[in-house]
Image (tube, rainbow, N blue to C red; front, top):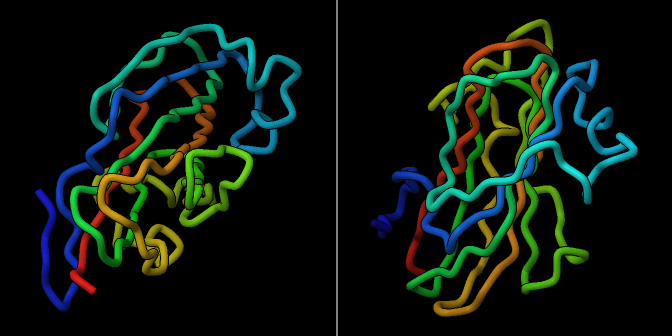
Length: 167
């Protein structure tokens, strides 16, 4: 459900087509650059799966994991959108203003600063967790991707929310 109001409130996770989930395990460190520079990234994950909404919580079976969730978001209404990301590790949210992944730009992120990024569901904790307003057109596909990095065995969480304002 999209919310149309002057003050943007974030609803349930962003409605998407089926998303790809790729996970790499046993990569030391908490920074996403460690994942990005891993020799097997982005083409050879340890595990592949799919999800139907941009919310994922799972008990990881390996220490020091990294994850990439990617696919397309297709708005049902034209207007101004904001996106928010939460996680319990470092994470980045990327969006392309078309279907091309190479056109993606980072729009929101969490950073691991001594465990302060444990933001499960709390997208208002830091301003960087929320994107600026982005104009999107109804029915158009937009490439979206999140990268996240965990430093230990835990219940991993990442979620992306969006809000809508009629322009």
